[in-house]
Image (cartoon, rainbow, N blue to C red):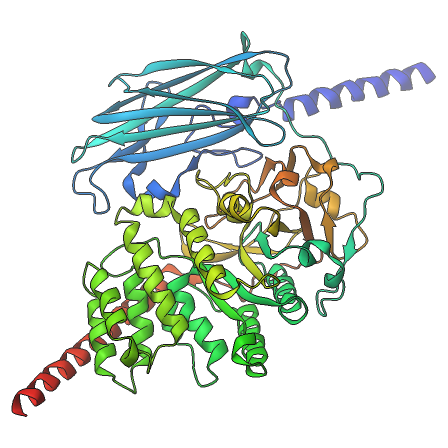
Length: 612
């Protein structure tokens, strides 16, 4: 009887193991990192290829049929409204398997037509997230599927960064079609290795953290990283999370009231921020929501604006704080650019005064060459200062000159965003926060503020690298992470949409920090964290893969963590694309009406002068 029970138990145990094995086949590197460019992906644990958003309007995605499957295609058709040629960049970062090899090899199979150049860019990245080797291979694919192969070094390489850039012949129909990528580690296919996952984190010995009261800000005064640096970068890992915004507001107020912060910079165009800065200095000014067609002035921003206006109302002019943007309008079109943003702001201010010189100044914004507007502003500054403050004149002169210098190419304007952020910040610090003990707080996404890499966003030199190179230890980069809650990002249906965050995987930093007793706290990052860890990243465009490997110790000096956030998206539908378009049309109509009124006043003035 006993023997029968044992055999019965063993039978079901074997059956269970076989069933579990059948249900959970191990995925390969090709599947996890989509090395065969599968059109429809299983979202579970897959890292999709990223599309460089700078070139998103320079090609259309699609597919081409082959004998056994669909192949991924990027194509351009003559007459495409935003560009005169195909331009595309796809990129992927692979956590390589544990190995002892010194050399690897990559093969890319693709084809295309009317291609001017294709570049395969490889970066080998260490556990400190530093580039230890780089290669660029340029080629032009055949019109039939063909393979390009290249060897690369593997010494101290833990991550392999792959970028594929394509440029078509100008004014010709063009496409590039991808079949797949094969990678060898030594002489062995990468698919023969088990897919590497970073291990679950454990608490370092003698770890210390500072609990924070997110309602009162208690605990912020104990954080050395806030006290000991002149320039503080507050980098969020996701956009639009209300808990992060509330905590950032507390930090900003702490820095202003107790640490002599005189300049707060936001990730928004400098030209658009003039309305915010006017609001906190002028108690009579009312912000027109139509000045911000693509942004939501949420409750947290309303609170910040109200608190800064109250603070400034109690201070002498020399002690007031300024709230400005350090970005610029990277879009350059006939209906959206830096000069048009300033036109809307200036003409709204001039509705009652109707100052002739301001009218003339506003008309010059409609010209393609903005240098005439800058010259007019300088020569008529006395008259224009009846309406605009000295700050506004300085900022308008700076951003018009810089924005025009960046040219009209949409892709280059997007790629140059981080360098423009730095040039704007340097200008504003030298203008308004140059005192030895004056602080500047910068609020932006961590992809910009960290001094290492913009990955997994588009590849460029991060804003944080410029800051570190220029200001050294005066600059500190801090990171905001949350356990759960919501984010705001764009998708196919919405211009901006609130979305719930996924659960943190067990090997993520968020999962580890959720085990702490405190609900909100600051954790200085010690050398124990000088390794690759998994953490959340969501930029302006949502991806179903939220967690990526980084070295956060290199990217930030400390982490603000909030584990008590709630999903609160029932009443947060975001800004529908239809609503955004309707508001854009309303702004355009009003702009045309204002232009007509200015022209009438100008004609009337000319007639009066002739009669006299």
